[in-house]
Length: 180
Image 1 (cartoon, rainbow, N blue to C red):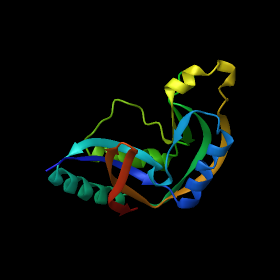
Image 2: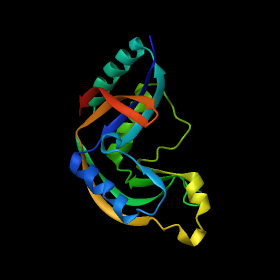
Image 3: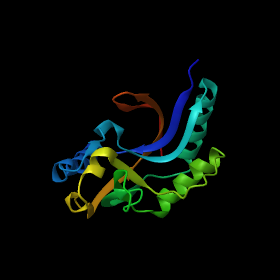
């Protein structure tokens, strides 16, 4: 059986997705492939390839995590180039590191026994830059993207998600939604 490419995420309400993706019009001249609304999420942990049995175990473990947390809100505070503004590869919406979000993310990693070597940097990928086209632009032609915003997102569940890589880009499906 084919392995599942799995991650744990927080999905966004449709209204927040619409507000975020409306920035595509503001920066239409930026050579980028914008994320589709159904692919906007906050990744808490990436597991990679898992078997059917491992996926079932992950779903059960995340149910236990959900029982330990209450609903909360997170604030999206800025849109900027990411992960490094000097050599950008994406357009990101940055999320404030609230104590509740950090506790949830750490609990997910600890429960999965997946100590990450990377620091958790909560963000949403709004667009992937087209590097070749970007390099062809003069530096002064590249628009500055660094805007403060405030969109509050209710977090009432976490999702065990599967990613399938397709020619058109990644396609995500929810394996299990866990209410907090």
